[in-house]
Image (tube, rainbow, N blue to C red; front, side, top):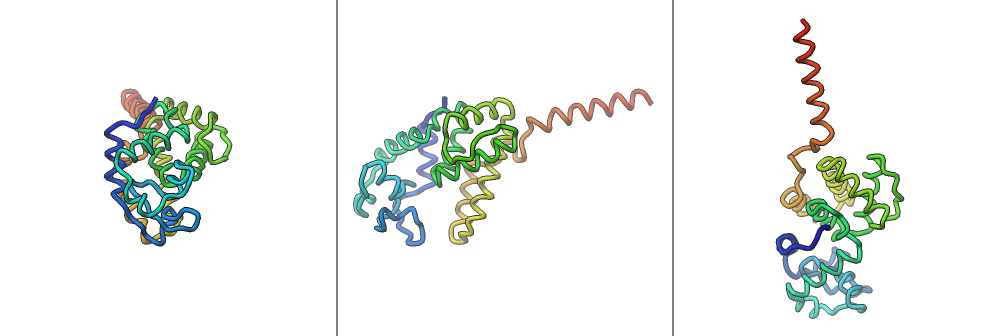
Length: 205
């Protein structure tokens, strides 16, 4: 099973940076109070973690140790440690950090496109997690790339010009397409068959 490795945690810190309190970022508000975000820990998520809303000063005072504890809790409550492949987990965890419900729905739509009949309930439940692991074992990079591209489409559809450049940079730098394209697990076998057919045809001529 996947885990929050020290390496992935350092990636999260690089991606998210320190404290910010952008007024147009809804993640900076908890029950109407603008308190900010630090290390990617939104005001709402910290409020859920603590059972109460943090103050702006408490958000500023959060440490990297707090962040490690938070993300260990966060990925656990969304069942993401049940994803078997570490690289696949890190993509799904990144998406869930942006919006767990929409991350699950994006993955579920892609799974349905691949023939896995899962409910579009916006939750990483047993059915969805089982399908994700089956899809990875069968399709590998193809399912990874499909979910990655679907998440990029979701981000673009949000129509947030002040954030989209940063979001796309994040995806391209830290969660690029595997193989630099659409994956090979489906197309490579077809290519091999095609080349074999071509050589057989030439031999008969």
